[in-house]
Amino acid sequence: MILITGANGQIGVDLAEALSAQHGTDHLLATDLRPPLADPPPVPFEVLDVTDERAVERLFSRCDFTQIIHLAGILSATGQQYPDLCWSVNVTGLKHMLDAARQHEIPLFWPSSIASFGPTTPRVETPQHTITEPKTMYGVTKVTGELLSQFYAAQYDVDVRSVRFPGVVSHAAPPGGGTTDWAVAMFFDAVSKGSYQCFVGPDTRMPMMYMPDAVKSVLDLLRADSRRLTVRTSYNVASISFTPAELAGAIQKHVPGFTCTYAPDYRQDIADSWPESIDDNPARTDWDWQPDFDLDGMVLDMLTGVARRLGHTTLLARLGHADSI
Ligand code: AKB
View (cartoon, rainbow, N blue to C red):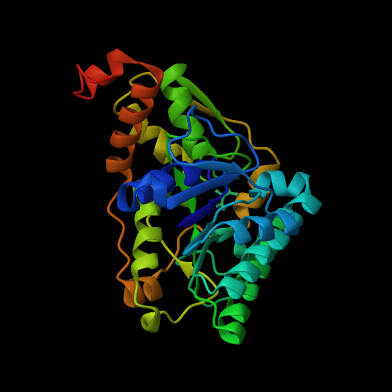
C-alpha cells in the first residue's frame, strides 16, 4: 500500500489520482491534517499530523506500506510568516517519515524546491550542484531536508528520491501560501473577473511547470532504476520559465480584454532570491526526464480546465469545447 501525506494539497490531489489510476484506490492511503475536499474522498483517507511522532508510528504499525509519498509541507510565503511551524512540518515531519522508511525498509519520495537556492546562487540555468544559501525559512527547511535525505540514503541505505519543484501550475486544487501562486491565481481571475492584480512585478521571471509534467516527473523518478540515480539530495527538474507579463500575454490570446496590474509585496523579495531558469541535465541523464508542455500548450489546457471548473461556457466554446462542461 502507498502512503501519501499532504494528500489534500495542490500536488497531492493530482498525484493521488494518477497513482490510483496506476495501482487502484485500494492500494493507496491518503492522509492530511485537513479533511478531504471531496465527500466521499476519491481514495481511502485518514487524518494524520506528520509532526506527531506517536501518530506516525501507530499508523505504520497498523498498515503495511510499500512506498511513502511525503507531500505534507508549508510553502515559502506562509513559512516566512510562521517560521517555527515551517520547521516543524517540513523538517520534523520529514524526519519522522525518513525514520519510518528506514525502520520498515520502504522507499520514500518527497518534494524539495527551487527555494533551496538563494541570492548567491547563479540565477540563470542554475546547475544541480551549486551554492544553496536560501534566505527564506522554507528554503532552509528544504536544504536541511535534502541533506537529511542524502545522509539516510548513504548511512542507512534508505531509497529516498526527490525533485526540486519549480512553481507548479494546476486547477484541481489550489496552491496555498507559495511565492509562485500568482501563476495559478492569474488563470482563475482571468476567467472569473477578466482582470488580475499580481503580487510580483511584470518582469519577474520564474521557473514553472504544468501539473501533468510535475506528476510525470514523480512517476518517472519512482520507476527509475535505483542504480542509475546519482543524486540523493534532490534532482533539479526544469520545464518552462516565464514572467507575469508573458503569462498575461499568453492568456490574452484566448481571453480578449484580460488585464493584469501589478502591486508587488513581500513575496517580490523571495522571488528575486530564486533562480530564473534551471539546468536539469542530471535528471535527464539519470532517469530520462523530459517535460511535455510549453507555455502555449499549458495556457490552452489550463484555461480549458479552469473554464470547466467555473462553468464558463462562452470561453469553453471559444476554446473549441462547446458541449463539454
Ligand atoms: C512556493 O512558491 O513556495 C512553492 C515552491 C516553488 O516551492 N511553489
